[in-house]
Image (cartoon, rainbow, N blue to C red; front, side):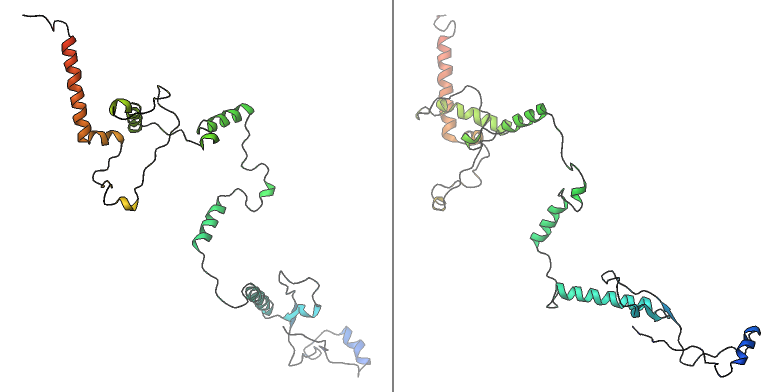
Length: 256
């Protein structure tokens, strides 16, 4: 920015004191108009301040050439301040590291958060007013989803048709396998809280007791239907039951 010092614009006419009174009354002509010096430059008073600068800046900086230099100096100062801020944020002059997958995940989660800029100005944001009865109903429904902490949060699994048939087969295990002793059922109805798991074979069982993917079944009923020994046993028991029914049927001992 250029600084200017005061200088006289007009030439002194102190030599002719008598002619000064006459010149005040006469009309201005081209002869009595003072001539400007050759190096004269017009200037204007324009405040050149950025947002970060203090308003108590030296008044000498307010005077700039009236050739658009005020706007240019403003742009230059703004660019310098931005450059200094970039250097302060990144003193080594290196490029910013690209965002990682974790950073993008954090930004996605924070975008859905209720706590945003200006959150303290919004009263009771995201809160839902409920009555005591509604809260009790909600707590009761949440409590019924699991058996409780004493059962390690055993869930109330959805009872589908396949799972229902498997549970019925498990309850009839005494009649399906008569050679093995099983504990009697503690309830006649199907359980409400249960969980279905899968047994993973050890690596040592790969060649001796591993079931191939082709022979794996989706449910216990499918495994029993695919078992040849189980089918022969059921057929033999079915024939015995039919033979007993034929002997106890009416007219079984009558001779023709």
